[in-house]
Length: 362
Image (cartoon, rainbow, N blue to C red; front, side, top):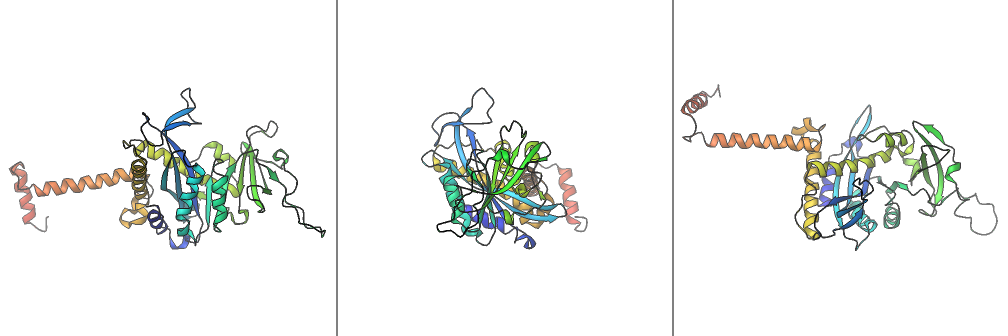
């Protein structure tokens, strides 16, 4: 199902945009469920919970989404993001391993594409980093912990015997050259880290106050040379994110926010948490079929020309419009099939027969 969804999605990319890069986004979401008979049901930490408890009882799903270019204008390239696979987390396998399996499952279909993986600091380690290293056309832009060991670039060879060091001296992020950008200070630098041992990467650090230096946010980009500084049409982001990524090569990271929009829409408008099945297979089948219908609604205007007028609407608005079209067809079909019914008033019946006889009028 994932591979078929990816194939359908790639087919709607316009010919003039096929050379542009596509993005993969990995993240997980919690779904509260009452009762403990559901597969994978457990108590999970929820950092956004506001009901006097930081824990939620229910299920966790790891999701992989793909973001593709669908149009280009003076304002830049518009990307559409759709979910392509959900997996239920049951603690017998880490989220990092599940994420790697999801990515590996579809990377063969993206061999001829430049692909960038977007993720938060939870996924920039372990199996996910191994996955990025396994695929030559896969790069990473993601958040990392602010206490990640970061080093200067190694010094150039000095002609002496022995291997040149892999790392330079350890870097203190408080000593970077920061520039004010909106409400935040930003700094970027080419560095080395143990995350990608012998590869030069770019980091960006944002902080609200460089004097107190509280809660800095650190991001890495494994391919700074090819990161496009394009103006993208993206989902609305929070003021915090907007200030953080107003400039610089990490503009692409804002696209990651679209997976949060997908989670919100699925839970609010698409009955994401209404499953009553309890087995792992049943839950995953329900969630993935729901995601498939959501995807269909989102790409239909780009797939079928007759629905082109709907391409600016949200998936739930498209769903409502399609439901209206279906109801109109059903009502018309039912009405015509019952024209001979005695329940139709004779005056209306005679009028309809008159118009049907007059072909031109009909």
